[in-house]
Length: 560
Image (cartoon, rainbow, N blue to C red; front, top):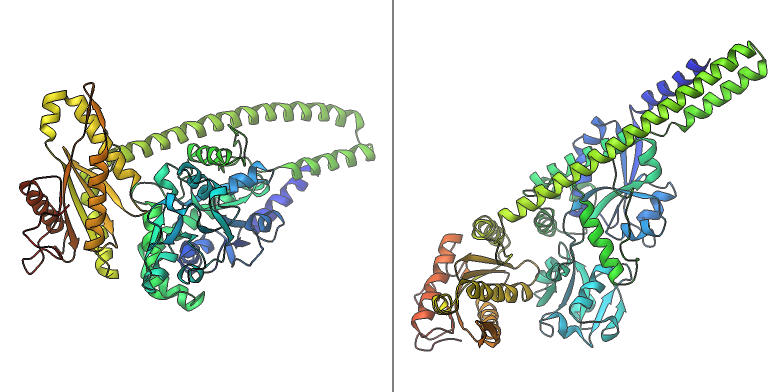
């Protein structure tokens, strides 16, 4: 009887796994933000895993976490505030991080706001759950009581009409609409101050993860197959979205979103869906920084572990019922009592074995996370300059051609600034190479502190630095380079016990005006830098245009 009672549920479970109906709650309207899930449905990846998946579009007032916990959905997509809900008692489990970097940014009226500090006293649209933006403003010295907070309108029209000065938005979405409206804007990312959240994390309930970890692992794998397909076929997915899900965005808007999402996902560096416990601890620390979490909050159980054993409570309940029935019948009572004692002994041994196995799995899981963390660090080091922390020439050689291809496709300019510290050899000869390192790090810090989201600062080699400025015309790029020159000139560096001021020279070239490829563009900027050096140093020169003249400048006037 016991064996029959245990066998029936197992057989029923096998049959049920052939086709499991699941619901995924999205956290916004249909667009390329969810293309991986559309691909998993369209290409049969969910069907191959034994699932029939329905997608629920976001509705006003519906929190994806509440939807999952109440049973209205089996899985959900949420931002990094998932860890805040978990800390407040919501039994949820993070399954896969789709975006390795959050797309959440501040977008301001570019004609009035050029730096984050200029938001002081300005009107800013924010929502209470955008903790990473509050922490970012705080780190930039802009406290909440120094801005005029306005409720979010979730659109760009109030910004364009001048009814607000800045809004929270996604770098994957609002910038395209602003560009189409020919509206000048500034964009500020929390990553400029080291705040690096995940974006769009797939999650489920802790109950589901305990009851069927194999199902959660299979759903995760099928979803990530869909995301890989969407990344490899963005145009096909844009057509699918327009045909079956939404015409709210144009095809060009969807492809813009796809390109920006790929940059935030970094599939060439990090495995799709990877969850790093250290990153989640960093996110929790940022919440603690703004007073939403206690210091050093622990996150045990928040990240999905595919090695969890399924919940067998139903089997033990059936076993107890069968034992009670056997005792009630009084058949072979003494023999059954002996069997019960032996069964309890076996259960205890099994529990001990399960405990040992669980502890072993936990240790192996920690070791695997350590390996992944080390791998991620090594991959990052391969494209970073060890002295300054900026991207190196190897990364630039890969990133600049891709940026120019996107610029050619979407028809926007890309400026390249090549900057060189004047008389740098004299610094090394006079004060030593350690002093030279101090100078290089000072210039690198200026570059880090004065870039927009999407800008790319790199160390080209020696005392030369490159700054790639997407969507920036020549006039604006010259102004940015000159502002960098002035900021560097104003630094008082302590070298060998002396206060020293240095200068730099820079050359500026713009795609496609000064070159139609990465090599030609950098060469044009280098030629302009050479002329700045020959013209007396401490100045900025534009590259020679196609007609042989400097765009907007007379050859006889050195430019600063």
